[in-house]
Length: 211
Image 1: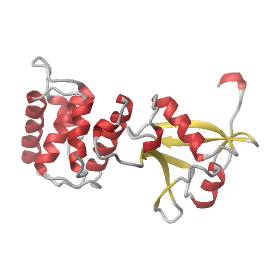
Image 2: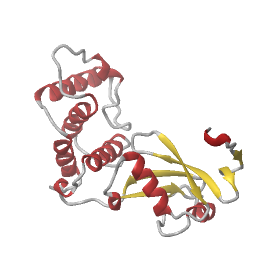
Image 3: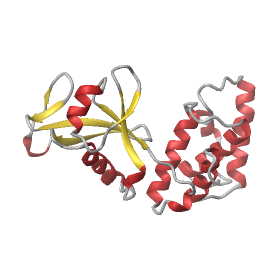
């Protein structure tokens, strides 16, 4: 650890001193980062620290949320001191980064990094069953997701990795034969299209009812 600092672990936080604490933030790709903040730091300061790591400039579309003591998702009030806010309402000091405000058209998003985070949010919501769509839409989105994550189809690439890749909503009960058939359709979807992140976002926005 830099400067020879040692963390003192408390029940709720890693504490560097009486004036600082370390909180964890789960990102949309499911990775977890840590941010060192002053006990007086606001939620906005924490959000800006996360945005800096993600190289995001359009921070006004995003927010931080946590699970309350009653296990309900609750957005951080960004203008308030974060530690006091979490101590009072959170079940644990784990924050989640996510899209808070949706725009009516993907063209409003100026930064590629912003579009990528929107894509991750849609993908997460579909896979976890919060955003409902038809089976045809699932295959289309899965094909675009594979392109976004692994690049365009190459005839020399094996598609076997798709069997290990989470393509479909977790609550979608599929027999093995049906799953294999749908996976092949996803492979064909990837093969048929070449795309960029704007295309992925434009199509994903249609699931929200935007154009």
